[in-house]
Image (tube, rainbow, N blue to C red; front, side):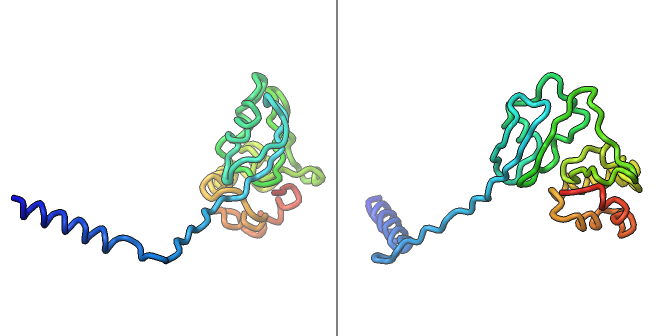
Length: 172
């Protein structure tokens, strides 16, 4: 019995000795990666409009929470709470009954942010119907915000012709 205990203690000591780091060797502590925050400006139907720094990646829901939540007058049907936000983005939460502009061939001076646009805003673009609007939203939700306008070519059903048609009406 005593021999078994002695063998066990020696074995534990040997394992500890073999697994311990060598003496006089510096221990290297590697820095942890921390993503840069995204800065957004949120206004409209939120409790505390303003500029906020959020962790990256974040979604519209996170921005709304940072701004104290939606006001009772907010129209949630016109926003996509699950959409990703991007650095420097301006977000306007619409009020109930507030009309969202639609975009026609002669309204090229007004653009929508393709990373935050609602289904209705995207569908109102020239050459974009219900299926293409849905495909753009699905792509955005799956892959995150578009990094360039040309990234729209990665969306099923969006080709050069469609992209050129909507390019004057969209921004990031």
